Image 1 (cartoon, rainbow, N blue to C red):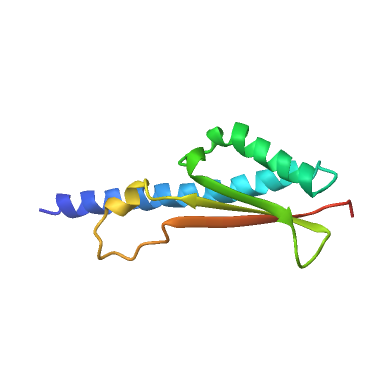
Image 2 (tube, helix red, strand yellow):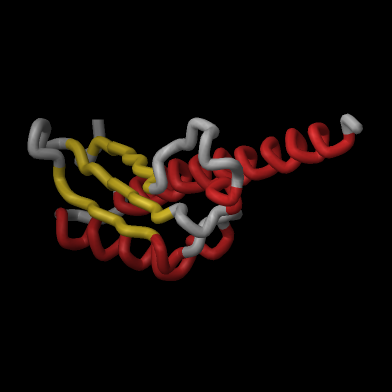
Length: 121
């Protein structure tokens, strides 16, 4: 009698866990792309390094499909000595959306960003 409730709870925990794993992976992608960009001498080189990182190294992150990532990399408009990498991920294909619709659900788009200081100290 309680088995269906426990199974539902277990599936819910797994689905939310996969979503949180994807969210963490997107944050790590933003941070790693920003660390890669620090080697660039100007905004154009840094953007090229970020694009190359996304194209070649994102396959190793769990729960993330590289074709659903959107990346924006540019110098900060507030502080010119900072470079900002923003990553958005369309999470529509994750199993969390198959749960009951009455449950509170997180956003379908996962957005994270990472900032690095350029030019040394």
